[in-house]
Image (tube, rainbow, N blue to C red; front, side, top):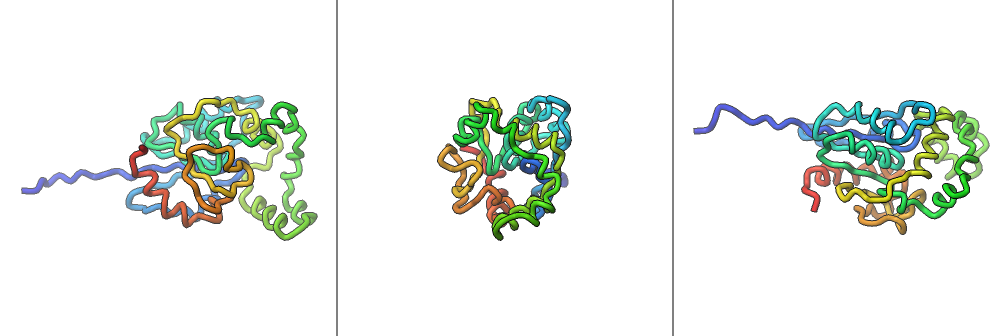
Length: 229
């Protein structure tokens, strides 16, 4: 005789963290089965003056209100979610188009750290992307700047200076073996030749969360549900 009590399985909460300065709208085409997953979008907020990445991560972690959640971070958001993980009880930690330690940063970023060249980046220009589009050369650059204009959430120079420094000067050396790393083999920001142990998206660029969303809709549910070997 069947029991009159039916075990109700709660949905899996999946939190998405966008890349540097980007809006959570970059995930607008991510569509996970609603009977199994519940999507939550995180947004960047202003760091405190000279705030460490760890302190910022702890504050962002407070916005994850579900236990045993899945955390997905893109690019700099992937770096941040790895720091957030120490403050949370997670079901799974996934990074996209990102790095697992400073050893995976490209050579040019390592040089920028040594020379402090990252401090010379004219971040103030991004406060008025509309003007940059007008003066851009070539259709590819214009299209890219229009994407930035559409999805840029944080244009504040203080945030941009802080965020770039956190990427270049990230101190993590040891790779967390529990991190699932999804990376495109055509990523131009974090070239694949520096990346180890990842799920390869063939032809995927650094912006593949936008233009390869069908791949994520097809594969993310399985990646989340399967046991990590």
